[in-house]
Image 1: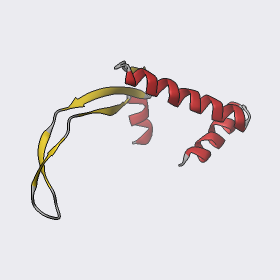
Image 2: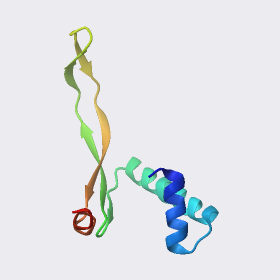
Image 3: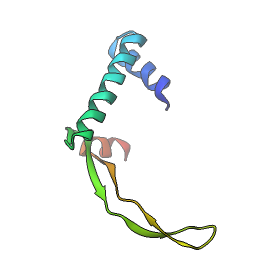
Image 4: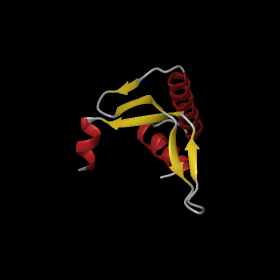
Length: 90
């Protein structure tokens, strides 16, 4: 499912127009991104939680040359599915 299909599904399920559904989805994505940027954790009961995790710098290998390289440290986003989401998929 891509963004346009998700907007259609939100509009159909909520009774909102497609334009309102797009604004709601964009607002959710924006609010999620800014909260994660501040280091906050977002928890949606039953759906799951988003959090930021720090990955330290580490050594790696260039697959084409075999030369050892250093992979820079960075923050990554983690998602852990909630129990209701997990049970609905299984």
